[in-house]
Amino acid sequence: MGNVLTTASTVTCQHTPSPLPAPPVPGMVAVSSEAKLKVEGKPVLVETSVVKSISGCPNTAAGTPCTQVTAVQAGRAQKLRAGGVPVLLDTLKATTNAGTLAKPAPHQTKLTSV
Image (cartoon, rainbow, N blue to C red; front, side, top):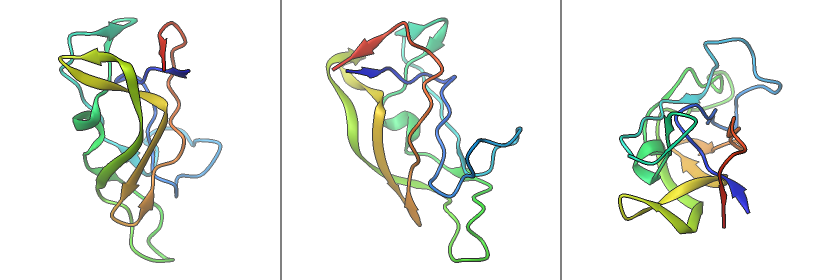
C-alpha cells in the first residue's frame, strides 16, 4: 500500500541533499497534473506528470546533472486510476538522464492504494 502522489508532493533526483534544503530545492522535478481526481484539493500524479524536466541538479562537479525524467519503472497503482491511467504512489521508481529519482515525499496520507 502506498500514499498517492499529488502536485503537492516533493519529487527529486537522487543527487538532492537530505534533508531537503529550503526552496528552491535542487534537483526538483517540475510536476504538473490535470487529473480530475484530487486529494486535499491537489490533482493526483500520473506517469505524464513526472516525465518532465528537472531543475538545479547538484551533480555538476561529479558528472552530468539530471535534467529530465526519462522513464517510470515502478510505483503505478494497480487499482486506482485517474482518467483511465494509473495514479503514482510514493513507491515511485524512475530513471533520469543521469541517474534515478529519490524516494518521493507524498505530503498527504488521506488516500492510499495498492
